Image 1 (spheres, rainbow, N blue to C red):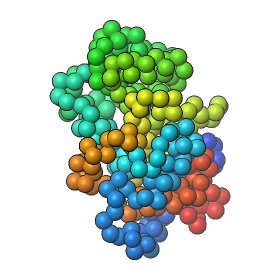
Image 2 (image 1 turned 120 degrees about the horizontal axis):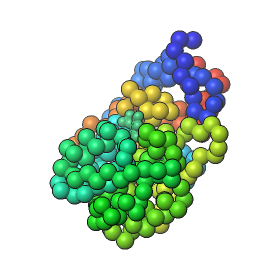
Image 3 (image 1 turned 90 degrees about the vertical axis):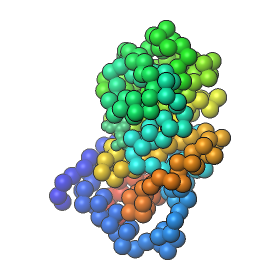
Image 4 (image 1 turned 135 degrees about the vertical axis):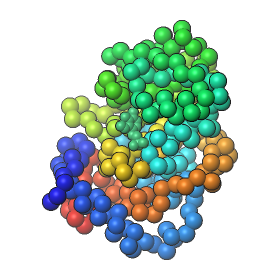
Length: 265
Ligand SMILES: Cc1ncc(COP(=O)(O)O)c(C=O)c1O
């Protein structure tokens, strides 16, 4: 079977050669539409599949038009910083937190405000004391990186209320929420947000494999004109990765189980 990859939700192992083989099979036999320039947000069917998954499994309130397919969370963070932040803007980041996120924010010229994390997640009251008018807060509410806590409901509400009152944005990095072995997944913060202050970032790096470099950004509907400046210029994931991952989606792989007949993917 070769190298074995653990699938999410304990659904059993799947061989890496099946995953990589599916990418290859898709590239060898593409639909004619797939070899042309596609929508810069990503192929429509793929965005539809991601949208269905996010609504059903993560409680994200989105339409597929609000999804931008990108090269992993790293690119999603970079695009978010370019669209949202100006040099000198203060941003809250979790302390301890994800170092690659800080690299992106420093490159964007932001003033980074580390906000400590306890067992309930980011300590919003400390953030408010340190930088009340910050432009954004970057958080991992489902599974704090690296401490592993889940942000409590009261902290989520506190953070959403702060964002609304300060005119700030929350960037929810939901990088590995698929992995829950002992309890039901906690829905996304995006689903709790009634004021469109949350930008949601997801990735296939954990649920499939990181060298795919495939992720997505769920942006507020009003952002498309600002985003399209980047989306039309940048190189987005191509046929082999996004096409074959779309097939995984359609076969229900991300609804918690890889199909038993994985060789036929
Ligand atoms: C907090 C966090 N976000 C995102 C990712 C995944 O990043 P990418 O999608 O760029 O592979 C990781 C990977 O370890 C991570 O720790």
